[in-house]
Image (cartoon, rainbow, N blue to C red):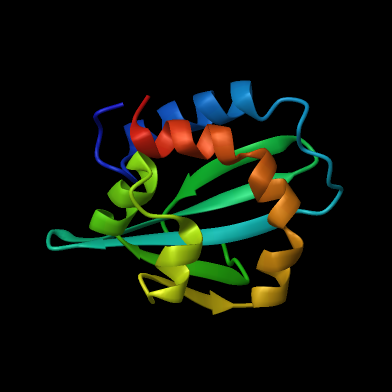
Amino acid sequence: MGEQIGSKQWISDSNEILSRLSSGIIETQNNFCIEVKFRSEGGNTSFSLIIGPHGARLEAGTGIKCRVSLLVDRRVAAELSDGSKTIAEAISNGDIKINGNINELVNAGDLLAGLAKALGAILSGE
């Protein structure tokens, strides 16, 4: 997946990966939504990750109104992907900005941990 993060093709390819990797690990009756905003010198890109009873999917842009959003620099996303930085380090250093309902994000920790493999594959471009 060499496409630009957030492009229509990237979203489509990512959703294909999510549908394969998240099968059977989603156990929620409620939808959880988190907006991810990547910033770079070339501009910002955003997409939403929605997790619900039928699995996980990405949607481009800001059309979905999520109660939690993350702002991440592309450089930091690359460091997270290659393992040179942990999420905890990035949050404590202020490299990841969290806006909205932080309790909802914390409560969704198990869901997000269950999708860690899928998200890692997406961010690394596999």
